[in-house]
Image (tube, rainbow, N blue to C red; front, side, top):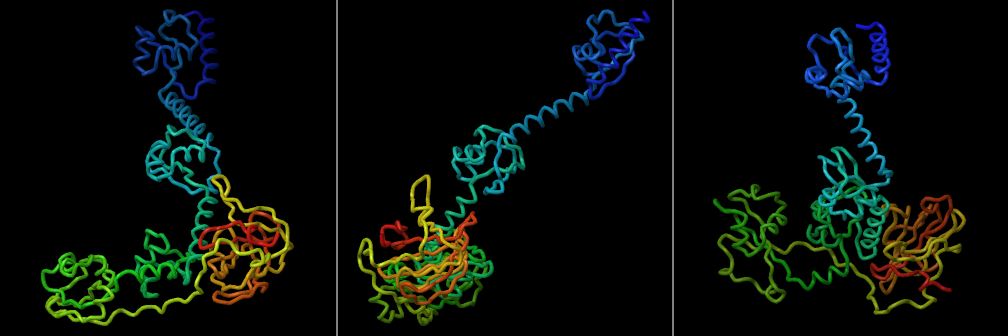
Length: 443
């Protein structure tokens, strides 16, 4: 072999190594062709020729040493390309996930799949994540399904709705359940779910729970009263069989007896059966023939004393002179209730630690910081169904149940949310409906 040609190829091979991640040196044997070498190493002929800068494969001779790009280098290159592609997809979504409600992908899928599983419109997911609905998301990818601020705002509205409409409010200090709260206050689980618009039985610490409202009490008064009988469970009895016998639901029997399931029923055990009767027949004693054998009547369950409350008059808005300003200052955010902006009160800028007063006579029905987004708040119920809300308070000077007069100090102004300014958030509601405070405050 020509010495100059050998040196030239050797230099080319050395230089080509700088462009390869991995390569294997191979000495050409007699009878070898580029095609045979290609099949032997599973590498394309073009890659071998390119790696060794060989323009004419017919000039390849036995004894020549050439570099073979290995499969490992190809795999690494493919992996690198894949990682770059995934990285570019992830980088496309410049979203601050710390400010989001997160859904983590369990298996690979598309944004449309996330929409189906979470119930969030795919259009909203595209906007929140800066992604296309057909984007492929690998397992472990975190998707923003809602802004935390949106969730907190929704929770705040729901909590204020509960506070405004309820006569008895409960704030558990520890995680609990509706069943435990129902037992403690002697109300039904179904009533609590209806009052608080809940589906789950779990209750978190600090969650605002409505126990009783006058409006619901009126509705319950129209329903048939409940009477109770004791029934001795027989061998072979099932929950459904007993329920059918007394024309009640199996769930009512379970709740009335604090039973978890049908398996808790035992032959010989006596259980309470709730029987609905009208007011007219409730005063009459049921005939023995109307009751199954071995049934004993027991007194009606003890009820909570009804809550008293001033009768509301039908008015639209109060006169100008009914309310006074809770604090003097500059309005920096007005009432707005639209699809784009939902700010249901006034933000009033003031000096720090300035006195906040009750805008009218009423009763304090809530104090605390469990309504997210407004810091410490005080809620006062007034006559004619009006409620006022005072937020961003630094100090609270009143207690739940306390009666206040117009002009009484209820607290001090504190820092307005997400700012260094001090002031007050002030909201007015008629029932649970927020109204513009400027419509009822003196001009």
